[in-house]
Length: 138
Image (cartoon, rainbow, N blue to C red; front, side, top):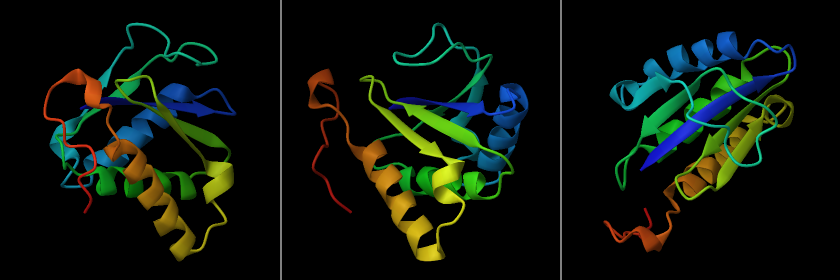
């Protein structure tokens, strides 16, 4: 499954924030070889403007969705100002996580949110006909 991550900031420094998230994700051994930078072909549905660059994360079924969810949540907790990470799935589903919502979370709350993000990433549409593994819990 190929997902994209786009960063939006209140300061408008999307490129800098995207670079920081890219560097952060590459520090995780589970995600290092799965993350790439690319220019988007078009603006994702529902987006409020174009992004100069997005990050692409290729996750195999049963892949490191927990690591991806945790990395995004922790990165947002450690950012100054307000940033939003929008995760776009192949079926058009979006998962949006904002630093305003995660900054004040306890460790338990951050863990729960990371699990929710990971679960959203695990949910795949069964209509693509390939490797239908929906409903496989962990």
